[in-house]
Image (cartoon, rainbow, N blue to C red; front, side, top):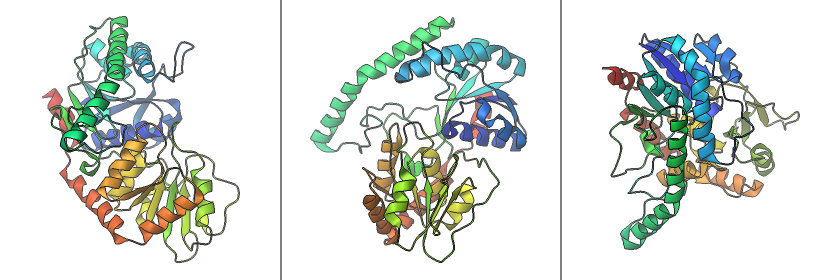
Length: 382
């Protein structure tokens, strides 16, 4: 089958889309990736037919502080920009990233079946959970269930506003206001980061993390035989700032070796016990004893897949939710605010107890329970 995969340029969404294209190609299908200009050369270099996703540049009327407007109004515009390119691609199926909803709208406008890609746990609201983003475990007992009910009611207005914005965007491009949704949803996480819910959608399939390395370079390890601490500053707009600097200050003199994995330019000067730069994270994780990260899904899932525990320094967005899920599972310690002393204490706590590594290995083992995303997509066409 010919499949168009649509995703924006944010690494947390573009990388899973590229990984999914690799899976399609390995299975004998023909993937075509539509994404931002930042990753076109890199994806093309590894054999993926990669094309520019038009319409990503913010317009004067776009309000990036309004998540609903950003997702839905811009999605309608992107769908119009994508429409002729998607038609010319002559695909059987479209896979559209959850934040790049224009791919799904364009598919619907052309009468092509489409699948939604969520490169993280299922974030749809549930009658059995507190609102996603709270970081809370489901309430127990009368008081706990009442707490969750009141919290869901408080967020209900925002959810209703989002549905209204989506309906208006759909009508604006000639579609019915009522959204039928995708034929299937690929939930690209590990079961250990999911939470049970009584209303799991029948079309949602947990397929495991979709991981891709943007480089073939391998970062050298600092000299010595101390524990290896891997730091991966967040790539998200809402990520915590100053993570590397605070970590270097806090761990100075502790005897650890530090390797910072960075997409951006590394600091010009580092102490002898630290290295930094763009290198394969899977290689670093084979050597790491603990990972310090913002708990964005990509790196968090990658660390757990490798059985490496995490010191989570969450920023905004879904990072707080994910950090607390990992902490409840036992594989992470959450640090907020991220002072040098608090980071150092958390790292030494993780290094001093095997329970965190054992929990991370348990999380890794849960990945054996996932479905094949290619087969899920093929089932849609069947």
